[in-house]
Amino acid sequence: MDRRDFLKISGLAAASAGLAGCAPRSPEPALHKQALGPDHMAQNYPGISLLGFGAMRWPMKDGEIDQEAVDEMIDYAMAHGVNYYDTAPVYLRGKSERATALALLRYPRESYIVATKCSNFRGPYSFEQGRDLYLKSLENFETDYIDYYLLHSLSGYDEFKERFEDTGLVDFFEKERQAGRIRQLGFSFHGPKEGFDEMLALHDKYHWDFVQIQMNYNDWKHATRDVNADYMYERLAEMDIPVVIMEPLLGGRLASVPAPLADLLKAAEPEKSIASWAFRFVGSFPKVLCVLSGMTYMEHLKDNLETYLDFEPLGEEDFKLLEEVAVKMNEYPLVPCTDCKYCMPCPYGIDIPGVFKFYNDNVREGTFVVSTEQKNYAKARKQYLLEYNKAVPTLRQADHCIGCGTCLEACPQQINIPEELHRIDRYVEQLKQGKL
Image (cartoon, rainbow, N blue to C red):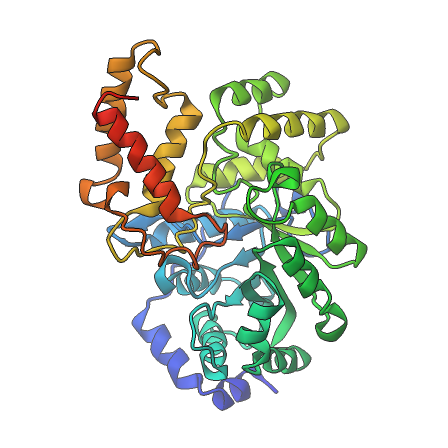
């Protein structure tokens, strides 16, 4: 079946034409000079860049995705050998897929790899709901196949059964794989050890081509909510299932570790960024197919390219150092938020990721007010409260949480969001009253 016939039977031909007409194509790719070109990009699996581009956090301008900035970043990534692009229908309120596609469509289809997902999170679940998400992804990318298709954010068999087996979707996706319209079929996982084992037990039946897991040097042995990453990676390696890595920076937390821990890493590698340690960690495992990074700015991309062009895996002493950092990091009162924004929008207008980010940043940077006994307490207290109001508007702060729990089901980190918001609110109230 050729592309035209497929688009015709799926009802996408007219939609694709209309889509292309309403959204102008990006200009032709710019050429970039580089010291190290695509041939220097690390690969564990032939033809797939070890560094992948996660399209969850594209740069924004006036409340919309900045397409010009997206084009520029993808041009630079393509010029340096990055060919794996991961997105989802739910990212950036439904606009990530098309913004990613507009940049990539300027290149030959065989030069890039599209990974996207069936994000049928909200019931009632139906075959039509999931199928339409899949067809819309094909439409957005103006393609007749998806390279890597994921059953998005599973926690175990019960959820898989409800969303994909009972609806007939997994059988449909298997047929699409057999027809070549899905090249690789897998799932992304957020859940407990038991749920992970349940999903792997289905391998004989569904033959997972890959699995996407959260893995970084903190979660390797110190995952705060779910199963440790070492267990997941080792199980997948034993079964010879390629591993795609998400959250290598733990939502940015490993790019900005508390100052004393940053000093440890800088002492070992003064010329390397703090973030590069996290990317070298996950890239050092041979069964890793691709490491996803949600790069919002060009400096993020360039720093990651510096890591993965002529890549140097970590040595034994490096692994020991990162384990030391992970142990000490868990002594800080951080909220394990990765800024995925799945919890948004809050029905009461709270900027949940914004509140958590401001709080975590202050803990990491040493500007967290500990007690009235600390040096310069009055100045630190005033500064914290002023900056909080600047970072998060008053009507969107933690004190407006009523504990409705709407956010709980959406959080892939299984954070008790109301509890953490109330904890931060109590802290702020103590600061306001000078009682901390």
